[in-house]
Length: 505
Image 1 (cartoon, rainbow, N blue to C red):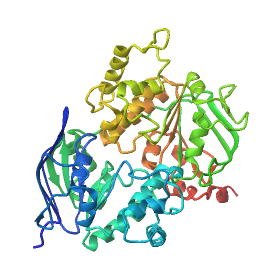
Image 2 (cartoon, rainbow, N blue to C red; image 1 turned 30 degrees about the vertical axis):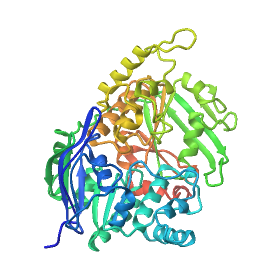
Image 3 (cartoon, rainbow, N blue to C red; image 1 turned 135 degrees about the horizontal axis):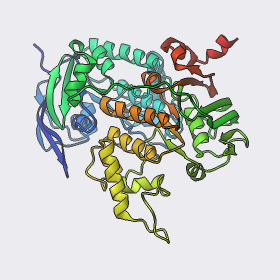
């Protein structure tokens, strides 16, 4: 019998105010695809970082191929055949895709790395241009870069932290083919995902964490989504109830929006027609990098170059208004980038409320601009409790939270503002099943209260669950809307390639 590819024994890691991992043991055999399952803040990402050498454990033992080993940094991890794709990407914005990948493959020339990227991208269906600067990429495109970089190291143990969170169903299918092939060749895979159907399809073993401790080990292929949810969060997520509701008048109306890209790697918006009415949820599906970023910037006001008359809120032309003025009119926005756009990493959760809530009645200001700090902290404390955010209080800095918990706080911050129009990008990216159900339930509650909601997501299941109507964006063009009752995965998948124009013809 061969040695385990990876064996962890008694791994413990504590931070001020929280124990991330407590006496964790885990075994992964060669060629095994092993899931690590747990709700947000359960300690999954910390454990993976320990294996990869970017975090040092306080106690415990790590064995690779039967040998005791101390992995002091990611370089040593890669030397021992370990590669990792992080949920929050490790890319330099000012460098190109090829230059970022080259940093980890310094034995090769930049030209060789560029050719290898093109080869892997074509082989695995992860389309990416090696010459593009990273700052011009969407979140989904950045994830493709991370996956390709990991595959180019030919790892013996590949760690994937939410690898499909911003991939289309077609891309997920291609990735699974790749992962199953890697597994058949002897590569072990540690797979973190909140998508239970993926774990059941792909993985043959599963370790469940709750509160930093191992609470169960199972074969997910012998479990149901409901039983995995019970193992992970102690209960099944509540079923969403969608009551039929008649939509009101248009809160936002976009007519004939044409907008040239701001940089050479962006996407031109062409002839965008869109309206979102009070009391309805409108979804936009599409492969990452097809104009979602450009459209959201135009709608939120971050890009105020839209032609006059192309974007209205009610009867008011907001095409050239900056975000602050649109926010005063009731437009609130949840961007896909949590750290750096949705929240300032080094600011506390309380002070991050001020990014979009300076006019809130519950946070009045003194004359002269002084903030009532105690009220601010009380407000943040209420949101932390209401949205079940795992954080060390309202003074915890944003970067100290897990991705899913930060997402819950940001979504809660904007929903709490009682918006007239809420625009949400990737609302449940990296969020566990219980929290995802809560966020989706809050979106439907907003809709039922008369709010207009626009959801941009690459999770088709999510769009089918919460939307009343659905558009698809492809190459900067927006499809006609289709009622959710008439939408199918196959139809939306075809439209992602721009094929609605052929069908209309």
